Image (cartoon, rainbow, N blue to C red; front, side, top):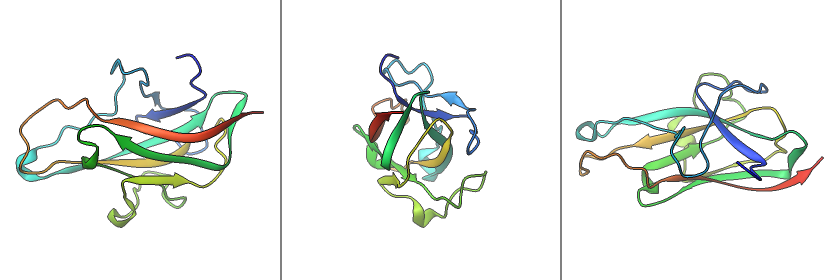
Length: 141
């Protein structure tokens, strides 16, 4: 994972810690963010995630913008709320197609949330077309 100065983590990461499982970023789907949903019920699933920089790096004070790209990216939403960093996700109204973390991100987890949704008009599938995108200016310490 050369030059991955900022990474996303899953499996219940803790705010201000360095835990969690690294999400695959090379397209190999070795550790993907995944949600199993029943389209006949138009379900949704909220997933707790965290973002942090590698040792020796940080984002500038503008933080990071997070969104999704891909064929069915519209079925994924993201939210960041400084008040929702434990296990309680933000309210549904906080989720949007993109989220901005408006602070410098260093070597400790900053928790954010993703929400996957299904609709009743889709067929069962293993959709791997969606990618989480992080846009940030990374600076060396």
